Image (tube, rainbow, N blue to C red; front, top):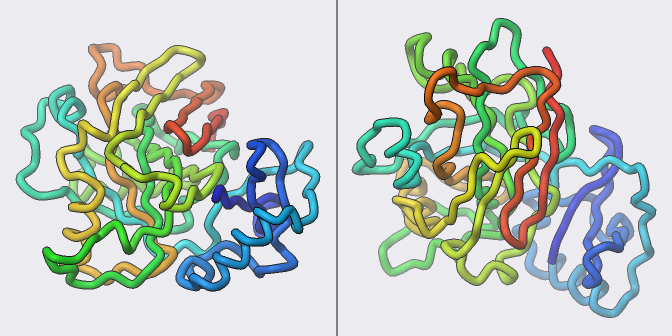
Length: 286
């Protein structure tokens, strides 16, 4: 299923994309919202699936309606840095021996077509298309004989917007360059895990002002999705509604020759992952 939320910010209603790929069906008569509580409830998801397949859900007018993040009340956003061989190479970094883990605050999450704000005094705002993993079952200390993908509810497109000066040149951790307002567009859909049989077989692309900048594949990940979920569960408990951004392929502005083409107000970024949908954001000054 492709689950989404539509409406003004803070007042989104749950929906599902019909099998025709264009029609939205209203879920508000079945569930209050698409959140961790729903994702952890197999019976509720089964009811949605049955109603959708039976054509029982009312059509939801979509023209001119905002698409919000496909997940409400995001728990934590765990991010994995330097997780593609080609991206590590373009930044001059050695492939990490263990996953590089940092966080984004849940309030950085916005809709897939919402405005992205260039922070005040920013000179190095950068783009990063990423596969987002949405947790559906509580995962703690996963053992080697457990399947980490069984704890995944679904997948989505994430834009891990980053400010490189804040991240790298200002001291301390990466968090200052990762948590600026609007720095994690998510969606348009939360695609349930049954529709993504192999998360290591997805292509990721990103364009800036119509020019292709990133064109990668999750097969190039240093630490595959299953390994990332297992690894993170050793250090923190993952709850339904938590999100893991799993890294970006080569092609970011940071990896380009000087002068690096960092983002400015007025730029338009578009990104997509095979089967998971497409985003578009216009940048404006904060």
